[in-house]
Structures are given as C-alpha cells and as structure tokens.
Image (cartoon, rainbow, N blue to C red; front, top):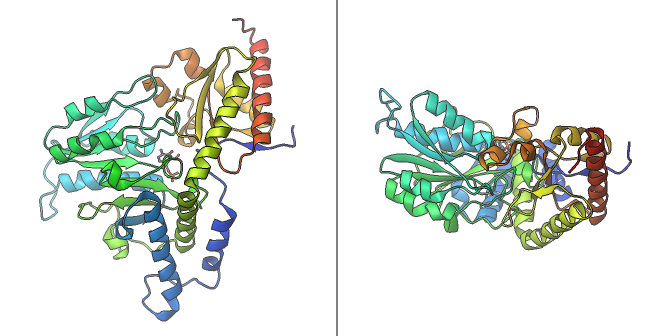
Length: 396
Ligand code: PLP
C-alpha cells in the first residue's frame, strides 16, 4: 500500500473548497431560521439564499429569478424531462389527455442516466422518444436531431459535456430547430459548468441543469435554470417554495455552499481551464511514453477535467482495483454505473471495439490535483498495466 493518495475521480464528486465550507458553517448553527419565514429572525438566511441564487445565475449568465434550487443534477434533469412532458400531455386547465401518445422527446445515445432513464420511463408510458446517434468521439449528430424535430416536439435534451468522454456537444446549433418545432431545449450542464464557459443566452436553452458537488460545492444541491416564461409542471407538490416549482424547506447550508462554489468557479474559470488543460496534457504525455497500446478516447475538444483512456490487453475493472490498492482513485465510467458490470453505453454508442471498451478507464481532474500527484499516478498506472499484461500473457 502506498502513502500517497491521488484522487482522480472528480467527475464523480469533488472535494468541497475550504471557502465553501466556511460560508456554510453559520447555517448549521445560529442561522437556522427557515428562509420562508418572513420574520426579521429569518432575514439573514433569506438573504443568504438570494445571494446564492445570484451567484449561481452569475456562473451561467442567467437572471437570478430563473434559478430553481433542487437536490442536484438528477432532480434537475428529471424536472426538465417530466416537467415538460407532463405539461405537453395536459390540456390548458391541467387535465391529463387520455394518452401520452403524441408527446415527442428527442435526446441522444450518450446522455447520463439522469436524462436517459426518465426518457425511458416516459417511453414506457407511451411517449415517443428519439435517441440521436453520435460519432466515434461521442459527438451527437445534430443534423439528425434537426431532421427529427418536427412541429409538436415537446423537448430536445442534449447534454453539454459528456461525463465519460468529456465531449462538448453543439447544443447552440439546436436552438433554431427547437424554436421552429415549438420544443423546449434542455441541456444537462453538470459536467460543463465550471469546466468551460457556460452562458444560457449564447446556448439558447430554455432549461439547464447543474450540480453543486461537481464544482467543489456540497452534495445534495443543484439547480435548474428555467428561462423566464417557460411552463413546467412540478414533480412534487407542497408549499409555495421556488415559485411552486419545487416545494419543500430550502437546504440553506447547501444552497449557500453551492452559491459560493459557483462564484469561485466563475471568477477562477480562465485560470482553472489553463491549469486543468496543462495537467491533462502532461498526464497524457507521461502515460503514452514507453507504453504501447494506449488509446485516448476523449476528443481534442473535451472538457479539461475528463480523460477517457483504453489500454490494450487488460480489463479496466482489474486495473481499477490494482490502482485503488496503490492509493489512486479513478473510475471505469460514470459514478452512477460503477457498480454495474455492463459495458458503458457511452463508449458503446461511440462504437469502441469490445477490446477498447473492456480496457477503458476514466481519469478526472480538479484544481486540487498537483503536478507531483499526476507524475506519480502516471508512473503507477503504467507499472500496473504492464503487470496485468504480464499476468494475462498479453503480447502485441
Ligand atoms: N448529469 C451528469 C452529466 C452527471 O455526470 C451527473 C453525475 O455524475 C448527474 C447528471 C447527476 O448529478 P447529481 O449527482 O447531482 O444527481
């Protein structure tokens, strides 16, 4: 066992920034009042939530009134998909039509399960869901989506940055097609926000999901951007919080921490992108020198935080265990499918050979990783790959 621990699974979750923790602390203690309480006693927490709303809006170029706080990326995605589908399947006084048939959603084959599975559920209920294919880089075929977006389409949902390959999708190309079809345009920006410039106006989206714990904020909090004037059906019913779109007492410490994380991400964005790009390129250089059979699956335009690599002649899952024993934490795919032995649907959709699928590993970086950590991790990965290859008699 090694004493140096290197965490390279930042696409699964990140360490909370010390400034985020500091901002949250008062709200676990003396500032416990419910922000829905209109008394002076609650003014501090009420105000803190509104400051956080501004900070979140600032990260994505939105107006604070367009931010709805949720429990994270999964809830935001579900709210976008179900919220749109339900509105489209009701008449204008909210009565459900007899059938979901006629509600059309267009998404793609590389979405995170937080979008994919609500779509599959709606399909079971009778909605029509179209899954656009992608190329070998995981880049979604936007021409296919434009052709499929016939009038009456309810929603087009295409993620901004893929969580396994890091591929950045051409979401802004879809805004005209969505508008012409009368569809809402949603993007899951959970792996994009804080890792590339994100501006809801430039993207032309109606709905955008983000999550706090991917950008050094606390877990269990996120937001859905809902463009002014967009009609959405809530997923849950209760009080009037979050303009009745998401009832329930607000998670004040989480929201405050999320806001601080967004502010840090926006103010440090350019510096962070340079830093992560340099780390990623250095890691690729170190991995590929004097080691054959290494394939970089992430395309050139991927976010700098994510790197997918395949190693010939080994099983990614065996390498993962070996690296874990040596203090290096990475992943074979998304955190949500880590316990799932099935090959990644993203890498399969990108058409990777079964050999490359089997030997794939995702490394993901953050502002807290150092050069020294990455030098060490690359050395250990190479030694482990060579050892596993020897054990299974791999010969090129
Ligand atoms: N969307 C993407 C692209 C993700 O990578 C993740 C988490 O890995 C989610 C959604 C879910 O976010 P959360 O963990 O906040 O529910």
